[in-house]
Image 1 (cartoon, rainbow, N blue to C red):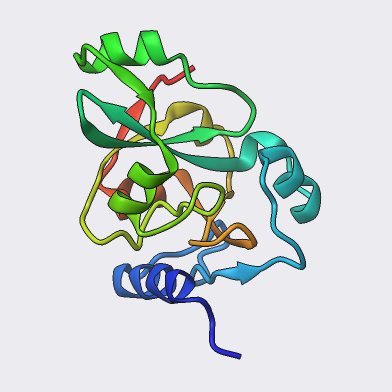
Image 2 (tube, rainbow, N blue to C red):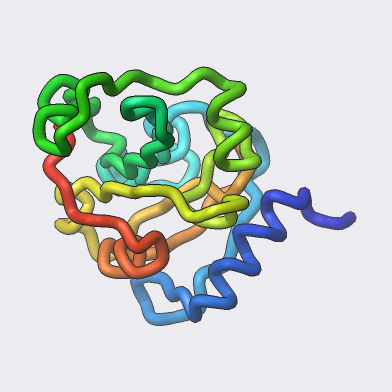
Length: 162
């Protein structure tokens, strides 16, 4: 069975960047038995701490897409984040906005594999883990990586988001 086009796009982006996991091995998208729609469910399935899950959240920041990769252990402080990045309005994006800018659906948005690069912020709380897990383009796909790799792969900026 051929992998979903979004999973292929994510794997191609990882391969093209020479991405690696916490052990130094190439990052590979893994398909889980079932979709995981929460950080807690993903952590339980993978046998890791919930803080090791890098949630990919798309926000509309003054009309432009903003990808925030946040630790599954907490929620984004939208008012504080908006103030820190100098936007007047920061709100969770609609499913249509997410699909338009990522080509992916909520619950499976990966940090990479989008039609165009997105402005990205990466939660500094993820830095305390040797390995973190991010979505792989569909709700049942994930891949292992590291905090420095997420910054490199996405061109993202470290940020205090909670």
